[in-house]
Image 1 (tube, helix red, strand yellow):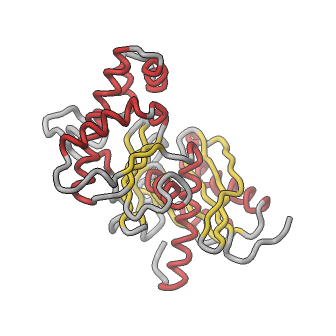
Image 2 (image 1 turned 90 degrees about the vertical axis):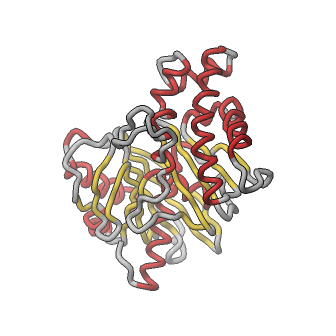
Length: 315
């Protein structure tokens, strides 16, 4: 295999409760491309030590197969401390994750600079650099699944705030007296639009089945999608009012519904957005599918390593 120029290849690991995905991306002359992707089982039941060990061993296997990797980014499903590279709380990955170092042990095992990023922010970064949001100056992204992940980009960069938590679009309050959300708040977008609530609204066992039935013309499924689209539209309208993005990217399995979901969102935006024109706001389905988190983690690792080389900032 031909050895790449120094600094062009980057590894991304996307930690999930069931599987961990990986991606190798290449950055060349301002252009990003994905070279390879894959996945393996996450040993979640064996505890954090086993999970971190598997991240390291998986990374080592990939780096051996794709020489020239110079950084690693790790997407985690929850909260983390960007200054220490430790996790604070992970969703759907059991164990004592509070204060658990992840970036350093993985980086040390691979001999590479390593950096953490929230998995929804990784999704958004991938779509911004390589996917449906490519070329956007400002972007809002949502990934619909067990929860509602979110991301915002301003001036071509993912905005993460001082602690990596900025962009939680799904945890904005749209009804102060609404149902409880898993985050402990009431009336979040996620409390209305996560997968189980969509399935309930559509009268189906799963969100995927809801999309299938809606496509077949099932009235209850269509009404349920419209209801969820309305709540998503309220949240997105808030983001448009505050940020005025040019692109809205929606990912996750439910995004496969396309205009059956997007049209109710657009209708709600038309009712609520009064401070800016919607003519230049594009709503698109995410383009990178299940690999977006790993791809975005790789991009994040590359960009953070470059920044650290310049200013010496922490992981």
